[in-house]
Length: 222
Image 1 (cartoon, rainbow, N blue to C red):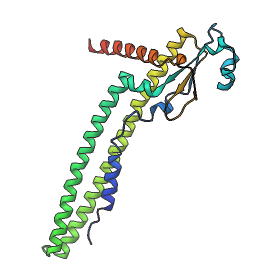
Image 2: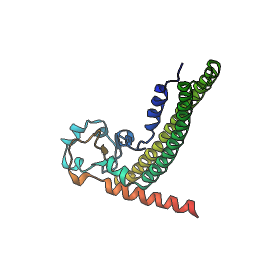
Image 3: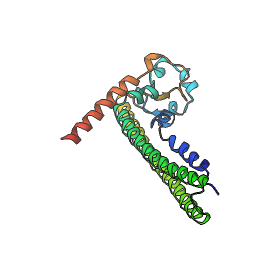
Image 4: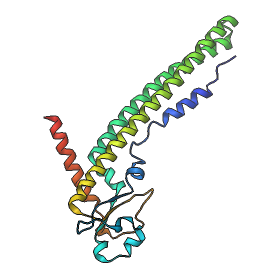
């Protein structure tokens, strides 16, 4: 019998998925809403109202609402950018390592098939070679699956790091700003269907995040 390449090619397609942007889906799960204090500093039933009800309230209450565009935030946040670059470099390296192993295996398969076509191996030798190649193919597929699982785990941890940093900063940010509600908007899913641009605090949050991140980086380099 001849070793088929179907399963190998399937594992190769799976590994190709590693070339994904680490934060592509992050804005979807980053946060739905941050509930803080009303401008007067007292929390009340406003926090339990729907977005529609809040929008119908007085102008004073409306001024206590803000929103963040998480697509823009992630693209401008230096921590997210640096972690993305680091992860993509590692994923690219892992993919290249897999491709090298794949090509080496395919070369062995091609050599075996060539010898078989030319009648250069006995039936006993062919069975031995095929058993060895099947074992190598299984090992290669296991290697690909393990690499995928490791990268996915690392990706999840990095996403959590960014998500936690953003949530923590916005919580501190709102301790001073006292917004009644900070909402999330992005291209994929949005709590804010339409809003006054004046309520968009994305750049203010990004500036604060980047200053905080720069300060933390400066401490670690000392």
